[in-house]
Image (cartoon, rainbow, N blue to C red):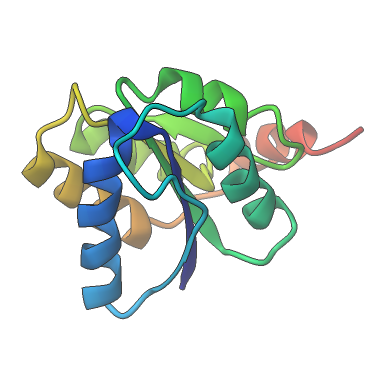
Length: 143
């Protein structure tokens, strides 16, 4: 799977560690930055990561920040993106299973590293169950 990554300075360290995890699992990564822990504005890096998913260049995306909230808000402004801020394994699983989230948002200041790794693994392998949720999700992408 090809996965886009985007972060600000507050999520930089977690992005780098998740990037290594993804590559070790055999995934291809498109890293849209940032590339250091120096202060930056997150939309500059998060929006291109989300747009790559919306254009179909990447199958999924993961964005990072201090809390993950601003990054999710930015990603969700891109048509076709369903970005979920997740804080535990259950929220990550349900974001895929019920909401067909195609972008995951993680807060480095709020989620311990090992939990983030577990959430990423679970989020990547959880399928969308479709059914009654499919109609509602499809409506999100209609002009």
